[in-house]
Amino acid sequence: MIIAANLKTNLTRAETGVYVEELESYMKAHDISQEVLVFPATSSLNEHNGEVIIGAQNAYPTNSGAFTGEIGLDHLNEFSIKTILIGHSERRHILGETQVELVKKFNFYKEQGFKIVYCVGEPLEKREAGKTQMMEYIGAQYEGIDTAYENLIIAYEPVWAIGTGLTPTLEDIQAIHTDLKEKSHAPLLYGGSVKVNNAKEVLELQNVDGILVGSAALYAEHFCSMIQFAQDI
Ligand code: 13P
Image 1 (tube, rainbow, N blue to C red):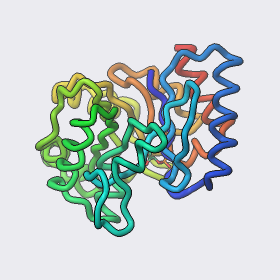
Image 2: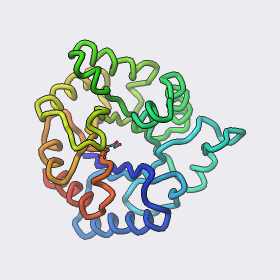
Image 3: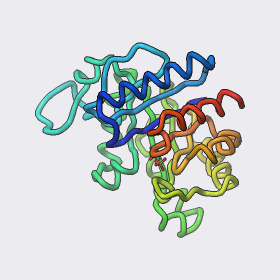
Image 4: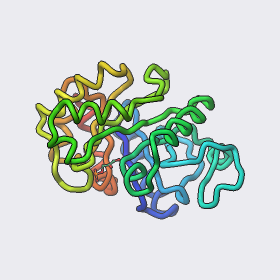
């Protein structure tokens, strides 16, 4: 299974270093064979030799250039980073990234052979509008994306479940994952208010290949418990 932590705008570089080492020692001590990904804040990226895979939360589709405030491939190469998160709802909705921009980013990092965790998910009004509208909305987030890309991982994260403590029912998660698996056979993670107390039941669902965890992953101990659940399934 794939257990991923999106640290968002949390943990400094020093704190991230300690965090990742805590994960490494837990994984070593417990013979963890799951794929563990950690996405630190951009300024917390660093070279890492170990089992944990470090990925970028964002980067511009360029090697380098005049894109104030962005980083490019050169900056990721400096730290041997070959994994990137694309299409997170916070980037779509707060930073205003469009599907066209996301596709450019996707294609650029695909060309470089990156492991790409591509996020999709609907806001509350689309969910409340009924299944057809909701699936149309999510379907549009697949437009232009090579769903057969070998290093693709998809994360389904309902926007209204992120950071709110709300989650779809287990039945809903399973149903939507089953539908989304028809769009792509890539591993499919669930994200949105995954905590220690619900991670196990989410991980046990059919067509759930892992989890993408935000706030609860900030505590290494909690995140390690979730890694352990995945290992024990
Ligand atoms: P929370 O786990 O805090 O709801 O965040 C989920 C998320 O956005 C992971 O990318």
